[in-house]
Image 1: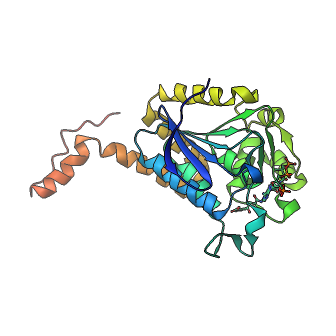
Image 2: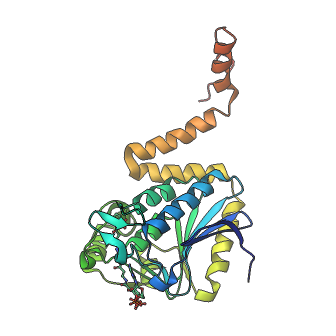
Image 3: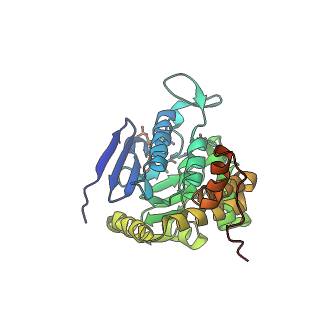
Length: 272
Ligand code: S0N
C-alpha cells in the first residue's frame, strides 16, 4: 500500500515524516549506504527530540533510504583522530547520544531494516525496541576489521540479546548474517519480503497504538532498568514520579505548603 507521509521538518541528511501518529526518521545518504556523518547524527538527534516532545507521535520508525542499506555505520570519509569530523572541524562520536535517546524515548521505536545494517548501523538497529527486516537485510559488525569498536551498548546489549558466545563471534569474526540468521539469533522480530516491509512495520505500529501508551512506556522503562543500572532506575523512577504527580495525594503536600497548613495525607488509601 502506498501511504502519504507528511514532512515534519526539512533536514539535509535525513527525512523526518509522519503518518497517522507514526514518525519516520530516514537516513538519507543512499549513495554511501546511509553511512552517518556528525551532521546526519545531529539531525537524527533533533528529530528524536521532537518525537519525544510531540504528543501526536506514538511510535517512531528508524530506517534508511533506498533498497540497499539501513545504515553502514560511521562515514569513513570523515573519520578523524578522536571521532567523526563535521563542518566545524570538531571530532565527535555523537551517535552515542542518539543511542541513549532511542533507549530512553518513552515510546516504541521500530528499526525498519531494508538492507545492510553494519557497524554503527547495526548498533542503531539493536537500540530500537523492535526490528522488522526485509529478506535482503544483512547484519554485522566490522569494527576490528576497519579500526573501530563499540564496547558500550553495541557489545553489552548485543550480548544480552544473542548471548555471550554469539556476541563475541559477531565482533571477533566480523561476519555478515542474513535476515533469517539474525531472526534465529533473536535480534530481529520478523522478516518479510522487501516490498511488504513498510506495510508490516505500520501494522506493528498501529497494533501498539491500540494499547495503553503509559503501559508501553512503563514496560520499556522496566525492561531497560534491569540492564541499565542507576541510569535505568532513574528513568523508571522518573516515570513513577510523573504518575505520582497525577494523584491528589502528591498535590496535597504542595497545596498545604502554599496554604500554610499541615498537609492531610490520612485521607489517601494505603493499599496492600
Ligand atoms: C555496507 C557494505 C557491506 C555494502 O557493500 P556494497 O553493497 O558492495 O556497496 P559498496 O560499493 O561497498 O558501497 C557503496 C558506496 O558507499 C560507500 N560506503 C559504504 N559504507 C561506507 C561507510 N561506512 N563510510 C563511508 N562510505 C561508505 C562505499 O565506499 C562506496 O563508495 P564508492 O561507490 O565511492 O566506492 C560495504 O559498503 C561496507 O562494508 N561498508 C563499510 C561498513 C563499515 O565497516 N562500517 C563501519 C564504520 N564504522 C563504524 O560504524 C564505527 C562506529 C563507531 O565508530 C563508533 C563506535 C563507538 C562509539 C561511537 C561510534 C561512532 O560512530 O560515533
